[in-house]
Structure formats: C-alpha cells, structure tokens
Image (cartoon, rainbow, N blue to C red; front, side, top):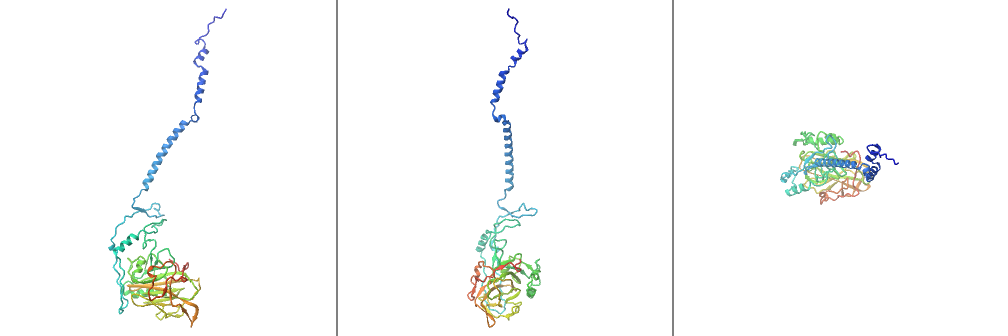
Length: 440
C-alpha cells in the first residue's frame, strides 16, 4: 500500500520554509558578480581620496591668490620715488623714499658775478684778462648733462645710484686742477680756511688787518714740522682732493674753495692747501724742483725744504739759501705768466737719490689777500751724476712734476710760449706708494 502520508507544508516544516525564504545559492552568485565589477581604484577607497584632494586644491588656490595680492600691494610704489639703499640701524630694512620730481631752476639765478681782481702792487702797471663768464646757455647745458652720469648712491648700505654728474656732490668723480675726489693715486690735499674756526666763527686772520696773523699762523705750521694740528683750530673742508700734479695757471683765488666744494662757506683769501704722500724715485739721476706760487709755494722732500718761492717766502729767503741741503740756488726759468709780476720759476737745490727709494713729500700752497692765484711746479734733471765745479749740470729744460700717469687736464697741456717743459715727463713720474705720508 502506498504511503499516503501527506508531504509537510511550509507551515508544518520549518526547514522547508527557510529554504524558500532565503535561497542561498542564487544570492551568493549575485554578490560575487557585483564585487567583481568594482575597479581597483574603488577597492582602495579612491572616491573619498579624490574628494579630499579636490577640497585641498581649492584651499591652496585660495591661499595663493591671497598671498600674491598682498605682496603685490606692498611693493607698488609711486613711480616718481626711489629708495635710498641705506642699510643697518633700526630701519635698515625699510629704505626711505624720497620724491625726485625735478624742480625747474632759473639759470640766471645760478650765474655768479666775476670776482674782482686786484694787483698786489700799488705801483704796478698791468693789463688783466677778463675772467670767464657763464652764459645762460652753458648753465642750461651743465644742468641737463651734469646730473645723469654714473655715481655711488647715498646711504651706508650697498648699491649704486645713478644721479650724479661730473662735479661736486657725490659725483662719479670731480676733477679739478687742485685734484680729484676719488679714483686716482696721488698726493692727498687738505684745504684750510684760516679766517674761521670749525664752528664758523671768525678768527684773528679774518679782517683785512689779519693778514699778519695769517702769515704768522702759516709760519708756525712750517716751523712745527708741518704738523696738521697747528691748523686744527681753523675750518677744514669736509673732503680732501687727490692731485697728480700741481700746475695751475692764473685764475680767481676762489678756484680753490670751489674745487673743495666750500665756496659758500669760504671767502677767497687767507686759505692754505696742504698736500702729502710718499713717492718712489723714478731714476738715479740728480734732479731739483723748479716752481713758484701766487702767493706762495713750499715743497718739503724727506722732511727738508726743497723749494720756497712766490710773492712770499717763509723758510728760505730770496737769497736762495737752502740750509737743509747746504746749497745756495739762484737759477731761474722764464715763465709766460699772466697777469704780470714774477715772470720766472725759481730752482731749488739738487737732490741725489737712488731709483726706487720711497720718500715722503709734502707741498703747501696758499693765497693771502685774495684776487688772482696760480702755482707751477716742475723738475729739472741733471745730464749725469757728475759734478762740474762742484755742481750738477742740468738739462736746461723742465719736466712737469707728476705723481701719476693719468691724462692731464686739457688746459695745462700747453704751458705757454716762453716755457720749455715736457708735460708728459715720461720716465720721470714719481708714483705714489703706501707709506707714512699717505694719510687722509
């Protein structure tokens, strides 16, 4: 008999119900198929990383735009201003700014009246040349061209500026017959005004009656061994000049204060310029200094007076008795000098040195009453080292006394018709070297 026992229904058999409610095999296959379709980037969580990178990139762009805009605003300057280049100090990292808008100047207000020239002799009959005058056109040219050449910027920091022309006031280099500011080797010259103190008060030399006091002060300087301390109570120009030669044809006595940049502070009288340095003897032949000055010129070679001549004498008399060298010198050379008076250059004693010897030298020049000033300094070389009747024989012609080989100023290339002088002095340049005489 067949088993007629009815099959259990899902309600009757829990296992049957469970198999119908949760079919295991088909579900697992679907899950496995879904997982196999996911990329490697998704498996690593790339969706979240991408979102994070996008957010950070946006933040970085916002920060960069803010920084660039801030820096740009801080460096925008007035196009008409410039920085000084100063460094150090409390504000060294913040250079000051100065307006440079050019202010037009009236050239007529800059022109000076020519200085009045007077004769040193009340009985002399002389004809004085007219002093050069400055035209408006030339002043215009000077103002336009003088302010654009190279030069060093102001301030104590590094940097090179661009607004300085040939002339005083931080120029590329100011060059005059009295010397240059920088860029050359030579004798260092210091300018003194004996009419006033360093604080600009008048001294005993200031009034016209003070000429005697001026001469005494100069004499005291020489007799002290040329000690600059003797002039310490007088006004001194702020900057020295470096001279390669001293050969200055006749001109206004105001030329010296102008060269030293103190023409506004110093009247053109009773001043002194003291040059000093150490030079190397170029040849082993004897030589001697030849020169003169208006009002006076003195040369000190190796602490011995080697020349003293001009309208005035301070150490050696007009008899030419050079006691330091035990020589009496009367030799003169004709000089085409204008205006009149002292149409000659006086020779000093013979000096016999060995080539290469380093010797200290000092030169002093000065103007007493004012008016016209000039100074001429050369050398004469002996034909040999042999003496004739106890004295060396000179070549009879002169060489410019030079301490460097820089190009000469145009106005002294031709010294005059009556003076035979070799202005290049080739082979006889007394080059300046380091030594005790070179102090600034």
